[in-house]
Length: 475
Image 1 (cartoon, rainbow, N blue to C red):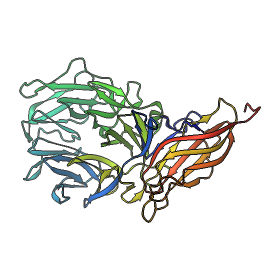
Image 2 (cartoon, rainbow, N blue to C red; image 1 turned 90 degrees about the vertical axis):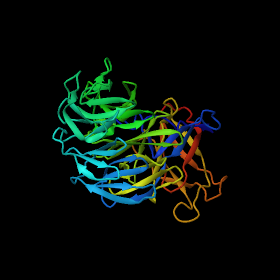
Image 3 (cartoon, rainbow, N blue to C red; image 1 turned 60 degrees about the vertical axis):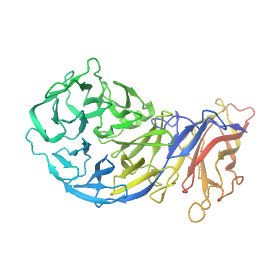
Image 4 (tube, rainbow, N blue to C red; image 1 turned 180 degrees about the horizontal axis):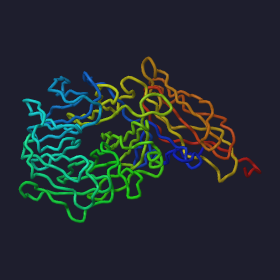
């Protein structure tokens, strides 16, 4: 038997004849020593319910001095590491995403209507200073001051020193290099970032009174921000959905001041085909040394996962349907644990690599292979074998006799056969049965689709096939 090209980095987009690949709820672990194979397919982490907030959706959150602050619906809550929830106050009701920051003494919240301050340990109030720009929807903290944008203008404003209730009429500045309005302000590694619709500027502290920041010369980039809440910190930098000068969107990651493209042509073809992408939202987490950027398109109903180690893209979803988004909307680290918020409820989940369900519901793992061919000649496959971790069955219930199914396409990934399922072995059955399928048939081109829906550990190390040439056949 010889290895089959199961592992690739394509994603089915504009033509199955080019690639029909799909990697759903899995990611690749590259083994530098190549002990058995250089690439291992692993299941993405599952989620365990931690707490449920009384209302939803969760619109923003932040951890300050060991306490989580979360805005859900109209209510601001504090949450301790023990899961004790306390209501701190309320704002205008809504479901849109919001932005939060803090200065160590105060938590600031902006919702696109007004600004609010929670004095830690004290009161939660609306910012009433007439100089605060009503309608701000993003906020950052830099060197003692809060920064917010003035909607639909080039201007940004800054608060008093360590006082988010104080805003003066002279404490503002304007985006300078291009007349595109500010979409979002952000702070990264001591820099103030002004994301516009068409360009991005970087500013730094200069210690001057009133407006102690200035633009860093020569750093303006001709990339705009395509989705306000696609920004997420990853690997000591930031990833986001950007708009290039030609008007299409790509996923980018900052390398210093330079946005570097991390999306592929396949991913970009999918994204640019959505009716809207401005509602994209991102979260990040770390799993076994893999920094993950999860980007969801609510209107498009899809979620994609970028691994900053392998620089590969995968797809994630909740449920067993053909195609859907993942229920994770926002992510946060609290007490060295990664959490995500459910967009459709008040649930907050812990992300865990040793859990194989999403809130006790099965996770669909699926790998669609590369095209397997023989130089355009017709050939037969007598046997397909997957080298997997077996004996992973549970003690009882679904998963006690776990199965993996295979479907075969002989028309370049357009249609597939009925699924054929084989056992992954009950608990402790490490040597047998093996995932083997026989008498696959003959074709010029094969594509294989492997699926597991049982809540068990998922690891594929390699795949191989026993083939035969069709004598005298050139297709």
